Amino acid sequence: MHTITPSRIVILLALYAGLWVVISATKREIQQDEKKTFLVVSASLAVAVFAANYLLFRAGVMSFLPWMNNFLHTFVWIGVCLTWLYFASSKDGLVRQFVLFATFSLIVKYAEQLTFGTWEHGHFFGIQGNFAYVLGWSLLDGLLPVVIRAGLHVLARLGVDGLVTIRAS
Image 1 (tube, rainbow, N blue to C red):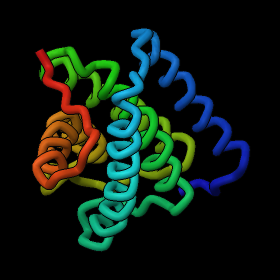
Image 2: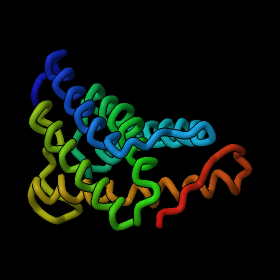
Image 3: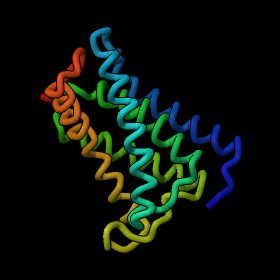
């Protein structure tokens, strides 16, 4: 694991910003009626994944993400960028969304591995090798649009007002 320095943080944030520019090339804007939904999805994903990353490490199925890396990964990358990707790709089919989320996830995980020396676990649920580990978690991230959509429907059924549910084509 590399020492997390301010320059390494800036490098990672620059990558996130570059990927955000690619994601935002769709010119999709968050509409007024979607802002609450964006904030709910963003905050929910960030908090849930931040905690899950640590708990999965404690369970032995993930490598440890140092707190700063975990914070940047969950609150900046997942909370902001992937939530934006969800809205930007919301009219696309689930297969396209899966490919987008899994591909961006793979890029970010390898960038964090190169920058911070993280994502170094040696297997993914018994499938040996670091490549299997990084690819496996990236493929699971490809399912985030389905998780987000299901979560929004659950919140709507629980009576949370003002959430916009989006159906992919």
